[in-house]
Image (cartoon, rainbow, N blue to C red; front, side, top):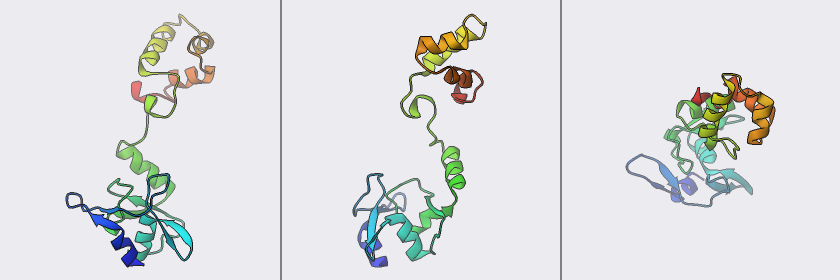
Length: 148
């Protein structure tokens, strides 16, 4: 089975990644079948070249979803994966965090209106078409923290 990993990947000389050229899943990760079951290619590579990951995640040190080089892979928990994402600046914030009704410019406008208590949170929520809790969380820096 290690031959399947090697034959369906190509080395990338600049990074050392082994880039998967086999089938891809909708999530952008390689996929491969073993004994009738479909696996993520990087997870199977780790299992074949290192050890069975069990219930752990197989994470990419190189941040390349197509990489199956076992030297670029490590085991971790969901918390480890999230911490890695945040540390590497891949955590979406503000407008990059999915569909948003607010933008950085609107946040500045809301803060300017609210800080001197000119407008209530309810009125701001109505004006900008969001829930009052959205305004509250933004003003308390529970969301949009990168703009505080």
